[in-house]
Image (cartoon, rainbow, N blue to C red; front, top):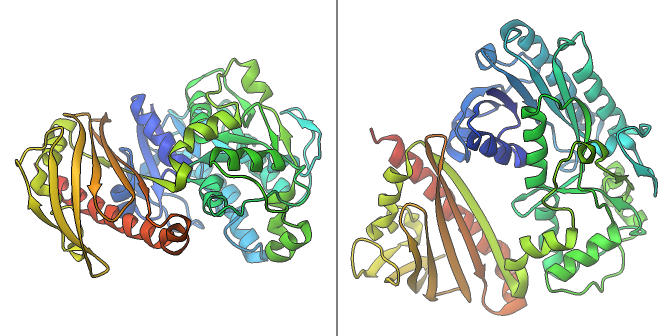
Length: 463
């Protein structure tokens, strides 16, 4: 299928488009900055610029499209809910969907078979201990009203042909290490100050990102899927339970008192409802359709996802899709001399001892570098080496208490998906994490941003 995706470069969109590529679909993506998207995306796509959301998106992106997936939307948590921000939140979801429908009716009316749109469980409002499924009544308030308009625009037969298959996924709190709510919570909890919010009795309906990706794939591919689905795990938890499970998975104890509801409202204003609303939602229609959740137990999921965070460790993941095969990309990394090329010049990286130019398992590499002007020596061991698949290097001597860097190479859409996973630990224990943690993370991010740009240039110029 040829699938048009909005929000393709976002937290959910990246992983969804990746999976759609694995399944053989082709992607057209609407984005504000196609150049940046090509550099930073972890999937293959044709990127089309749509920066003015008051105007129709480019019609070229719609030609021959079989399905449209609408994920874009202004963040509801990143800024104060002023009248101007509320207008942006609404426009980015509802008005854009109307513009998309207008262009689709002109340029892919003969090919378009399905439209899948994001929605949110905010549509139910604050419902206490009531169990909510897709048949439950809808709530009131700003978020509920936005979601009701959003879904109305999708199912309106005057916007989209009534014969089209239409699906709305009402999403809960999406959890994953590399973005969303959990990424924002982790720095607080790892400092030992994570606590329940308000009464702590409010229900949190969550879903893992990988399960949500599977829900969207089902909605796109399954011709029997239609209407509204609750995109949440079958096991909602209270905020108090969530706090306990997250702390336990990090090897910590919950000792901080709950954050007072009044204080949250003073600090966040209307946005406090995002933290204090209670929504105990169940995915009834998905369960009736036989959908299999991979992550239905929060404790098991956190233990798997957060195992590398215990004992003061931290884990970061960087991904990049390259329009070259694994056979073309891997030899570049198999040549240890290229280490200097993919390291920012500001680090003054210099290899001191290189047993051979071609990397092999057990190889020891000594090099020197400067971090913020401070000279350092580093010895790395190639702990694992699987040509054309993966390799792992470990710090034997250097500035970190632990540094394990795993590189994987996955064939994807005729190219190669590069994944760098780094597990590291800063010395000096809690003191080191408190005073240097954020600086180290920024430094590591800059290193991989440089690497991403270099690799993009290196393989773009090859014929």
